[in-house]
Length: 340
Image (tube, rainbow, N blue to C red; front, side, top):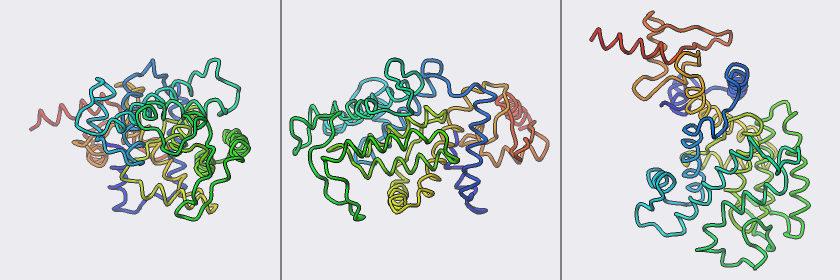
């Protein structure tokens, strides 16, 4: 299945989409998901969708922090419980912990049960995400400077060295107060004019606080996705190839410009929406944007060319995007092969 990042590579030949158009396309796609397809399916309803995203996220989010397992090793570990390769035990436990936390995040976001306080995110959820993500690796390789009180799920009791950019996290004695204020900022994201950009600012704010002794990057991305899914968006996967861009965007947000990070998140969310969610929830007969039907063998541009030649049935929406169905694409491909 062709993801939006591959489509963007093709689009970039004619000019990269401007940020506001990226935001607008995401807004329109989410509206279509909610109004025409009932919104995000639950993990129980659509296990395949969530499992595919889960594997991608567990791999890339841990790889951003230096984990060296490749995707096939992550999939074997999570799907079959097999530790393929000869990596250190710590690396397998990092992935296993993050995966357990990500599964909890998806379920928690859609069905919080007794955990809910009515807020978009609460303190218990912050601690729980960290506990799940760091617990397994902590058992085999705890942080060498941790006190007995700095176990997974507990805030740090050490001050953190300044970041390479010069940013200085708050003193450990101020962490709880900063996190409490931060949760207040998160609570108003739902009513923001641009929720994705507001969430980008909040994500950068969490990383500036650095509330835990270790695992802040992983925990921050887990909480980011908890809020995204709770708002009705697919989770974002920050790919390792985008690591430099992601870190630069975080630094820009630290300096008061969350736009670069917001755009990166919007592209990541749209990628998962078109790559995993829409094709699955739409079924074979529902109209979806052409990009959701593309594959490595049939790019969005080859499908559009077939439409323009009158060989593939499609409809153009009021937003100017062509929409087609999986059944129509299959029909076109079958007829093309018959002609050959």
